[in-house]
Structure formats: C-alpha cells, structure tokens
Image (tube, rainbow, N blue to C red; front, top):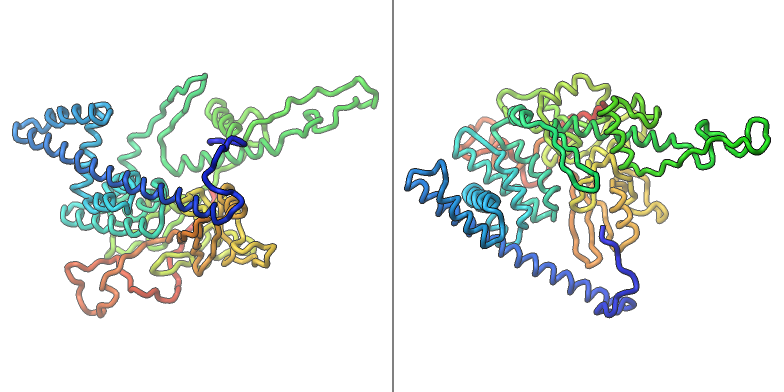
Amino acid sequence: MQQHRSNDVADPGFDPSDPASVAARRSEILAMEEAAAAMLAAGAALQLRAHAAAYDFGHALDVAEGCAESAMHVRSIANEVGLLVKLAAGTAQGHLASASVTLREFPALALALESNVATPAQVHKLVETGLKINHDDPAEQTHRRGEFVQVMLERVRREPLPPAALQKAAERVAEELTGESIDQRHERAKKRRRVSVEDLGDGMSILRVLMSSFLAHAIRDRARKQSKAIIRARPKPGTNQTGQAGETGQTGEPGELADAVAPDERTLDQVMSDVVADLLLTSDPTISSAANGIQATAHVSIPITTLFPDPARPARAPALLEGMSPMPIEDAKHLAATAPAFVRLLTHPITGAIQAVDAYTPTAAMRAFLKARDIHCRFIGCRQPATNCELDHTIDHQYGGKTATWNLSDFCKNHHIIKHHTAWTVTQHDGGTLEWTTPSGKTYVDRPEPHGPTFTPTDQLFRPADEPPGPNSSERSAPEEDPPPQLGQASSAPPF
C-alpha cells in the first residue's frame, strides 16, 4: 500500500484549518476525477467501435476469399492495430474479436460506455458474464441477453459497484437466464482443472490450483482455522516449551536456565502459507499439533424451490457458495443431504431480502440473521465475506444505539475503521438498506443481496388466473409495489 508522505507538502492549494476551503478543494478534485472518467469512457467507447470495425473488416475479407478459418486478414489488421496501440499482435487480435462480440451481442453496453454510465472495466465484466447466457433458440438467447443487460445497467446506475463486485452480482442474474445449467458448465469446466507454478524471483513462487470453488473455499477455511490455532498455541515470551518460566531450575538455584524458545512472529498469512505447504507435503501441519483435527466450514444457500423444483418451470434460482457464487445444483443437493445443520431464512417474495432467520438462542439468532442478510461487508462495493467481518452499530452504542438487528450490519475491518474515524456517515433503513453519505455530501445506497430468485416487472401478475400468457410474457415478474413480507425461500448454511 502507498504510504502517506509526511511534512513535505509545500502548498496544498487550500487552508487545512478552514472547513470551507477544505470542502472547496475536495469538490474541485472530485470534479476533475469525474471529468477524467467521462473522457476515458468516451475514448474507450470510440476504441471499442474502432476495434470492432477492424475485426469486421478483416473477417469480411476472409469470408470473401474463403479463408475464414485461418483468419489471415483478421490477423493482418490485428498486427497493424497492435503497432498503433502498442500491443502484441495476439493480444490485439483478442481485443478486436472481443469488441466485435460486444457490439453484436450487447450493443446497449457500448451506449452505456459512451454516456459514462459504465466504465470500460465494468463493461468487460458484464460482457464476460453475459456470454454465459445461452439458449438453443437464437432469438430467445438474444432476448435473454438483452434482459441481462437491462437488469445490470439498472444495478450500475443505482450502485457504483467495482468490477469484481459487479461480476458477482451479474453471475447470479446470468445463472437464472441461461438455458445451460451450471451443472453442465461445471462438468465442462472441471476438465480444465490443473496445477501451475509462476516464479516471481527472490526465491518465491505462486502455486495455483484450478479446482472446484467449493473445495477451494473449504481448503482456505481449514488452513485459516489451523493457522489461528497455531498462533493461539504460541508460548508466551520468557517461557519454555512447557509454558513454565525459565528463570531457575527445579531446585530453584540460578544457572539452570531452560532452553529459550525462539519467538514465532509470523503473521496469519505467513502461517497459512506454511500450513498449506505442510498439508500438501506431509498431510498434517508439522509446526504445531494444535491445528490437528480442525475441519473446514463452508456456507451454501439453497432456495427451497431449487431443492424441490416445479417440472413446469425448469428455470431454478442457483445455489450460492458464501451467498455470492453460483455452484452446481447437484453438488448443493448432496451437501444439503449430509449437512449437520440448517438455518432457515425467511425472504421477501419479490425482492428476496432477508426478513427473519430461525435459530435457537437470541445471540445466535441475531448473528445468524446478520450474516445471512448481509453476506458481505456493507460498504459500497466491498465484497469481503460476512464471515470475515465485524458487527457494527449504525448508531453508536455509546450514543444510545440499540444492539438490535435494525441497528447492526457487517463491515470488514478496513471499512469499520473508515466508518468510525472519517467523515463518511451511514443511515440504516428498513430491510437492512444502508444509505451512505460521503465527506463531499454525495449519497450512495447499498441494499442487501437478494436470496433466491430475482424478478423483473411484467404484466403477468396482473393477468387473471384463467387468461393464457401472451407471447411476450415472462415468468420473472413483479408488481410495482411490493406486497407484505411472507414466507419465501428456505436456505441452508450448513457447516462442513
């Protein structure tokens, strides 16, 4: 992380002791950032259209000359574009092909880029995710991809999500719209699992293992728990291996000092790295027996309609790993069948927002409710899992804030500190919706992630029950006004 400079600011351009001067300078800086972002978006949109035109130009020549398979003309112009934009020819060809696909399949995203509704990175993530929406009928596939873009652009306008967080939200929407199940895609993706090593220099390397998301999360959870156990088991300074003070021997006479214990000053991340190496090389951590027997925990949310699907409605809301990542339904059903415990979530039938959580004791119920409702850190755009977050009083406890679910939310340590020690403020509304106000006075709204299916408005709910659906009707429908909360999806959060 970039460190702040100290005592080397000659002329900051404002008076730090004058609040009006500070506010004016902050507004000026943010206005420059906003103008720069608009210029970058406009430039990216122009480049997108230029790349697409270049690809289509080369492809048209290849088709005309009967060499579409070898794509010689596409390669030729990609080489020339690569020289102009300072990219390798292969990379440039990939950019040209991607731009052509974006304009052909998602033209609304190009318009959103031109108008600075979405950033280039956001558009890239939406295209990457939207291409997962497939259907045997080309017209239906086009319709579903268009619906995907409509839903996601509305999300972008409502909430300024960074690309990674936007991709998580987009994957859930795409999963409900695609005609190819995640089980089919998972089986195909499993064939690509592999292990690789990237040397970084200085005697260090990155070990990469491409595997099931569920296994990856479980492995990291177990390594983290084992590492924490090792850290807790560290002998205190000035003690020997048995934990006894080493000043004198058993006779009490000086000179019989116990063997000194070298202090273990490794961080949690460093211990986790060593634990994973130990597990792979020796099957158990060798540095401490305190980590033996620790099992992994992973949380899976499964809508009850997914466990017991309606044959008349083959589309099912996905099962979600850690509340965000879709996972194969058959794997989720197997986990549900062997889960030692369930937490039942009561959700709003239209928005999918958490309404209540069944649990056994008040403290456990409150904690379970908030972890299930928030899923991740509730700062705008942050996706640190709630399991790694801290509970925070929206209205500080010292100022009379109640310890109640309507006054609590999850924050990662970094954003917990920002909330309490900077000029950011937050107000919690019904349903766990948080309204953030920046130090400059702008407001952003963060809503809890929906559980189970999501919906887009159509006229289906307003049609009499005996009236057949029209040609453009959709199963994904909702009235404009939300009905009262009622029993919704039941989800599991079993420990493993």
